[in-house]
Image 1: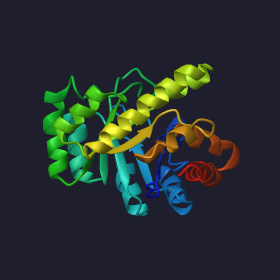
Image 2 (image 1 turned 90 degrees about the vertical axis):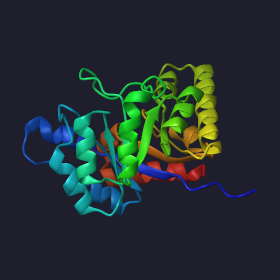
Image 3 (image 1 turned 30 degrees about the horizontal axis):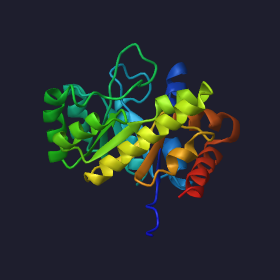
Image 4 (image 1 turned 30 degrees about the vertical axis):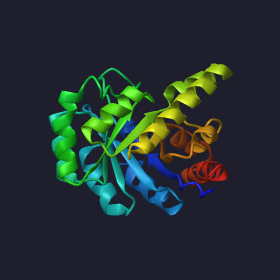
Length: 248
């Protein structure tokens, strides 16, 4: 039996910028967070440039890309403004996510199936520019099939429901959702789409997700930045990296 594929860890540094923006100025600098992630075994940086610029700012993207060789995964809404920013900065990857003005964080996956006509030209232009397109979707066959039609090379499976069921103590629900994620990852991989996962992952719940053999990357942010308040960002990332590696 072949060895499992390595599992990458992408670290979302949005909430370093959230703390900075709470007081204005330049501290703490998300670029410094990106440098720390690079130094302790992170495989990529994720940053979500929102319409209201509530955390990451436009100039952060250029500075992050200049400060580290880690690939930048730009989370973005499917808007003309964000498309033009992505085309200008040319990050390694662009993950298209749903975005509502009133939400605190991205809740739920993108309806790639229902928004095919809107998404197709955006995905096409990103692909043409050499930017690796990812779609943040629910672990659902219909959404995987939509990603195939859109020619998106990557999907990121939303693990928020899995995480919330665990917090509610619903063991049966957790197992059902875990199977749904595993089935979606297998379906994506079978059809030549690279499967990632993220949202709500913690030290306590990451290992069953990390053990899914078809997953190639986990993107984790809020929890790691929260833990960094208590144990430092270096240790926070190292501990997550260790937990992931234990099951791969």
